[in-house]
Image (cartoon, rainbow, N blue to C red; front, side):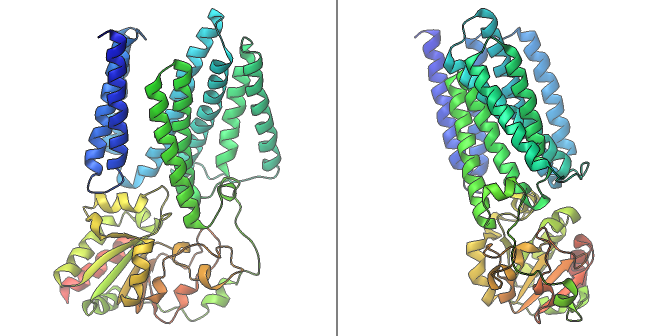
Length: 460
């Protein structure tokens, strides 16, 4: 068997492991195994590529491995689970940036050798465009999530974005038509970088899960097109898997918000009708409560549903919620969690936080599973969620969130909302749930409020 045959077999084995790993990640119980399978496939792919091709001096590779590993260890130790959205955004950006650098270097080398064909030029142009948009868009997403950048849209942004899109497409065409004029390639990279910034900077925080899923898809597509530039079939396969899964996830999340991808990217919400004033909705109908009163209600509850939102992540209340769950379980109360697909700031944000607190995945129910249960639920505790529990999505056809699937917490016998204030969510509309007859508002920090409830239960 020749060296080329060994490499082909290794690539085939790695591809199979990638597919099996992706399948394993579809279920919480098999996710660790899926993660190991995917990592094993990547190890095989790296070793096969390094042994097959003289890419660079191994001393340079060793230096890169040391630096990269050091950065990875620091991130693993220092980044908390609440910082996962930012970290995922960075990883997406690094993937796109790596594709641009590697494919760009290979393309420019072939240009110097005078051996460019149309297929290579098209692949290089696509890699540069998708990769650099992913890089800059992900960096902006990271900055917004980290709250180091608070900029939003500005007048004329749409027109400027349209001009940049035209320039980018024109530059990509010129790269294919005149591949030996590298100025077009650099114009493509520059215009694409600006397009990535402008395409992300106006997107609101509540849309970040969709944006991160989309950027993840872009990073996979960039890797796939880079595989054509490098003539590496495994890179094409791996990138296609990431890209396809990212596109599917993006579509699922858009459906969960009843919004099109166009609306998310261009930062528009549905409009229509007259949005009620907060004073008109709330008036003097809001009922405040205390941790002690909530504990008294929970003592006689048989089923409790906890609905986490972004406020839980901000307050880092996942461990306090775990303690509340265990305390109620010890008293014989059934406790489950209702998870909205777009709660938080990245896909699966609430799932990750609750898993970090060692809450069994079997207790985490998606929207379709938990909605039929609310009518038989004694108490639903909403922690830091707003739009995803707003009944206006069902009852008001003129509401900006009309038709958006929400958690029907108002079907519960009693709803306890833990929130800092009556402030509006991303949609900018008041939530009549907060003033409903069966709702009690516990104002304050999410973590402290939950710990106070636990203390009251233990002291009862």
